[in-house]
Each structure stands twice: as C-alpha cells, then as structure tokens.
Length: 474
Image 1 (cartoon, helix red, strand yellow):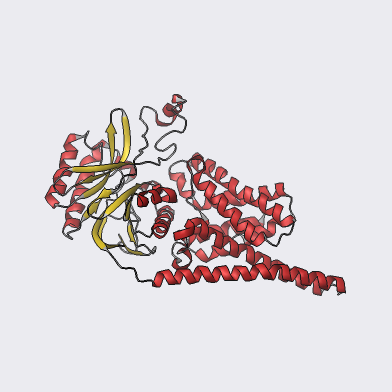
Image 2 (cartoon, helix red, strand yellow; image 1 turned 135 degrees about the vertical axis):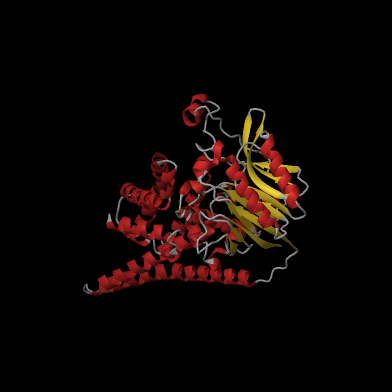
C-alpha cells in the first residue's frame, strides 16, 4: 500500500500547482515494485487504487462543481491505470526483454483511448506535466502529447529495471557462486543492456531534436497585435440578471483601455456577454457600438440562439460594428452543456438541467479571416489534439482559446488547462492565445513558450486586467 501511495503522490506533485515535473520520470517506479510477483488481478486492483488517488489529487478542484461528479470521474479514469497494471503484470510474468518498450507503448495507447472514448477526457495525460520543459516536448509536432508520455514512461520502466538489476546482482554476490549462476547473470545482464542502449539513443534523439527546433530560426511571414481582456467576473455573478450592468461596464472599460494599444483584435473570454447575443437587442447594440467606437475588431464569447437551439459561440465583430461571423462550440461538456443520450431519453435532460435547455453542438470548423486567419477554441476544446488540428488544416494560422475557469477557484486547474494549449501550439506549429475570465490568460508561440501573460503582483488568477502582445505568424 505504501508503494502505490508513494507513486500517486509523486505523480500529483509533477503537475500544477506543484510543478515538480521531474518527478513524473520516477513516479511509476514505486508502483512497478508494488506490482512485482502479483497476479494480473491483484496488479489491476493495486494500479486502480493508485490511479484513483492520483486523479483525486490532480482533479480535486472539480469539487467546486460537484463532489459526486469528482468521485465518479476519478473512479472511471482509474480504470485506465488498472488496465495498464493488469497488462504490465502479464508482460513482466514472462520477463520479456521488450517490456521496457511495450509498457510505454501500452500507456500511450491507453492515454489515447482515454482522450477519445465516451467524449474523451485527456486533461491529465502524463506528457502535460512537462509543459514547461521545452526541449523534451518538441517531439509533440509529430507524436502529439502521447509521444511525450511514451518517453516519460520509458524512463520510469528503465529506472525500475536498473534498480531491479542492481538488487539482483547484489543478491547473487551474497550467494555461493557457481558456474550456472554466473552464466544466468550474464544472460540477464545482456538481455537488459541492449534495450538500455536503445533507450539512451531515444533520449538522445528526443533532446537533440528539441534543442534543434528551439534554436531553429523561423521566418515570420506576418504578425498581428492582439489584446486579451480578463474580466474576472465571479461565477455567481455571471448569470445574475442584476449584475448585467456591472459586467458590461467592466468589459467596456477594459476594452477601451486595450484599444489605446491599437491592437488588430480584442478578445473577450467565453460567455463574457451576459445574455444571448442578437436576441438581447439592447445589450447587443451596446457591444456593436463599442467595437465601432474603438474601431477595433472584437472576438467575444456569447450564447446565441437559432430557433429553439442554443449555442456556446465565439462571435467576430468588425471595427465598423458589424457581426461578421460566428463559431458554435463543437465539443460540448457532458452534463455541463448537454446530457448524453438525452435525444433518446428526454427525461434525463430534465433531471440535469430542470427547466433550462441544453446547448446544441456546432458542426462547422469555422476559420475567421482578418487578413491572418484564426480559429477559436471554446472552453476545454483545446484539450483535444484532433480538434485543433482540424482547424489548422482548414487554414487557421493562429488559435485563440476563450474559456471560463472561474468554476475551479484558485487551484491548479487553470495551469493544467494552459498546459494543453502549449501542446496544441507545438503540435500544429502555430501560436496560441488564451483569454480566460479569471486566468490563466497568456500568449504562446509556436515552440510552446509562454512569453507574455496577464499578471499582477506575481499572480495570473482572479485579477482584472488586459494585456496586448504581438504574435508572429509563420
């Protein structure tokens, strides 16, 4: 029990807010020792408990939304740990020389499955712990985050193998030597040294590739100056009709301040408009007038309607005060924005949302055009690599994430979320801008560097401010 708890703690510490990312490279080692000589079923249970503790420690902030939801999600996600432990035990029973490579591959495949099955939730993929370790994560441009997870797990298995080998050699020295035991030891050593040399070559390639990409001179073909507005509206006030004027006044004031920097685009976060755009004509007119007054295009998060359907949207308004286009969020949050299977069982919708309606998913991978082309990712859409890649394939030269992380308080959630954006930048080699209601609002270049952010007195969260920065497009 102590070994699996140790693994869970080490892995938790590798993620924000602790940011001890190097611990990810040894976090599984105690678990591997706990799995030694265990039956596959016991290995599943041990790994499942470890996974549950890990997810509980990294996703604890979900208690702000629902304690029951947090427990259920952790119980589900821990299944992937359990399956990994079961398969790991099966391979180590046969003492395969390929265990060093098979285990990381199994882990990467399970992470991919976790990110895609049942709407997917890849928030805590192992690779995200390294979002500040720029050399090692550059391989994400051809392997995605799963390749980085593979490398981390590869190091874990290698460390475990080396410790096991050293312990075995010491044990043999204490025994009476015989020719047979020496031959067996030599075979054991040769079966491990060959894979270890391969691991060393892989790490050499990973870091060599990373340093090469970081030092590579990339010619900027264009640039755009963008201002992000961090309104810092408390969650309890966002949908309070009595707070509408307070919200509009705050965003108006910050927008006018940002306009003094003469940006090419001003961005508001997800659902920053306190109503339904277009349907609420008075408020809509004020926003259109604001864009016209500042003579600056405005991208804002707003709820929109079409007939009986509601959408979580990103709307682009021109500097002349005209609505140019909108993107409707494609990947909705289950039980937060829609209820799975509610089309077949309508009563589920009423149980979750009561009299309120649920959102409808968009279908169009919209790319906005202001000269430079960009796409908007709403809420947690930047967690999904395939989604971001579709926008880039459609011509987006820049990704803008608009989100509201106010739900999660002053926790590691906002930084864990930002780690996903870092990987989307590297995978697609495009800059990413994050505009969040309460933070973390920042600017990320195509190498994954966070080079500018909204910050006051050393903090990024729950502050009211704007930030203007230049973005180099390549």
